[in-house]
Length: 239
Image (tube, rainbow, N blue to C red; front, side, top):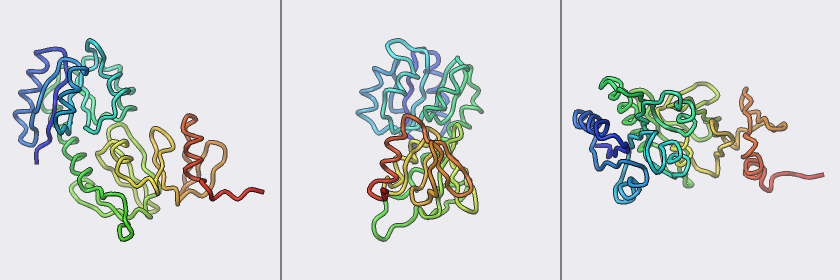
């Protein structure tokens, strides 16, 4: 198994260094490079891309604006000289954030997260059929079965996701966006940029707060109408 990756960076020296790092990691395969996101679109459209190494300060369109405007499926590792954009980048579900100059050991750690995220994505089950009530995740070194009915909610924590059941908490290296894409929408809904909840486990809604398990989760204001429609649908009995 190799992760197919591309580099988007306007600095030739930076691209060359990342290319050399990639060549030293046996589970990575470089399929292309571009000096800005606009030129990378053809690469992404013409290749299966699992991982993107993305700079921020580039001509035409910067890396942050690219993330905001793209419906990408690949994992993103930021490679930039600007540490101050880390919080915003993680809010856009990047997997890791590397500040130049990048040591190989730090690069390898980020790539190992990408590998684990990819394996987790592979093991997540497709939306459930009549006989399908669970999915698999890679948690640390184990592949674990998780029943949809046991999962209360998922919380994004920078470059990983926490899965909460009634009895335990699991840490998974995957972005919340990737998880949302693969969980069945009939059962789960994103209520905030950092939270996905199991609709069947909601106990009550008061204002913008959802009670689920022993916790309370805030509904994002811009998602509130959509979330309430998803949760209530035709189940609301009116007086």
